[in-house]
Length: 124
Image (cartoon, rainbow, N blue to C red; front, side, top):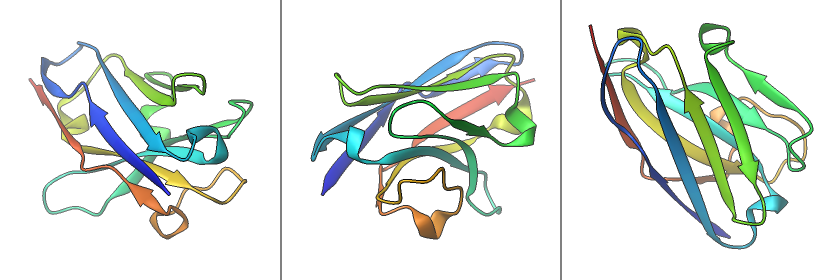
C-alpha cells in the first residue's frame, strides 16, 4: 500500500506557473504507474497526465499538452506536475494517484490509491 500527499497548489494569475508535488510513503512509488487528475466544481474527475514506472512513457490530456510536464524521482518517491501558461480553465482540485497496472493507464477506476487533493486557482 502507498500513501500520497500532494502539495504546491495555490492561487496564480493566468499565464503563470505552478509545480505540484506528490510525495509517496509506504511501498516505493517506483512500483506504480502514477497519474495526476483534476476535478473542477460540477465536473467529473479527469486525467491530466500519467507516467510509467520507469518514466519512459508519459501521457497528457489534449488540453494540457505543451503546457504541463509530468515527471518522477523514484529515489525521492515523488512525482511532479509542472504547469506553465496556466489558464482560468485549469482551476480545479488536483489529485495524485497510483496504479498497480504496469501500463500507462488513464481511467480513474484503474488507479488504486489517491491523495487528498490540492487546490489550484487561476485568476484571469
